[in-house]
Length: 75
Image (cartoon, rainbow, N blue to C red):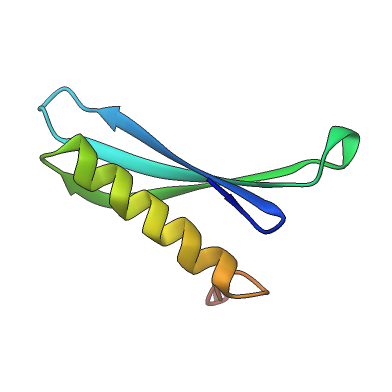
């Protein structure tokens, strides 16, 4: 889904145990200036549709913050 300058793409993978894992690709730019961030999400789902919806929502949340998520520094 194109949102402003970003392309948000949910990625779903079925695991050996039948659960679904999700990630989301957030792409911006074009040509040699393309940036693609892939966020691996830790929550698991029984349904592919729910996993995709969650990944999409997390991607939208990420681009809603102009600086991306805040990471705590490791000490």
